Image (cartoon, rainbow, N blue to C red):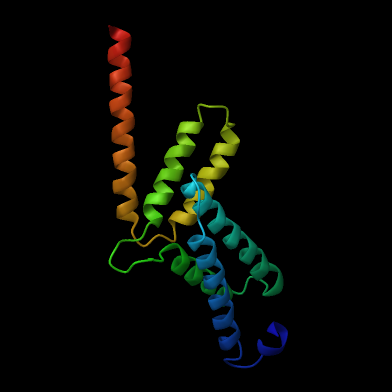
Length: 160
């Protein structure tokens, strides 16, 4: 279809819209079905899985056409910033901040530095789609404050 519609002026519009809708629905399905005790990890990994799958598809099938890359970006942003209840804020900034916090806590527990760098780089992929980056900052600042208070307590105990 891509090869047939590309030469036609405006021919790709419907195909781009269909791809965007499909990616958005796939992403929403992945985000809505999170259950268990590691929801932040599931959230980030499922979004990255959808993003990676469709990034590869766009590279191979659509020759990395910028219109399709834009559709991927819009769809990922819609899935990541989805609000189950319009009255409440989006959960994505909190989930991403918890995932990053858990990663950095685990870094001292046997995860290699390269693996940590890769996972943090993947977090940036999710972060770039967040609409509420300031909410992410607030959640992460709270987590850092808790960490520093624990470290201060620990250092006080060591001094005694």
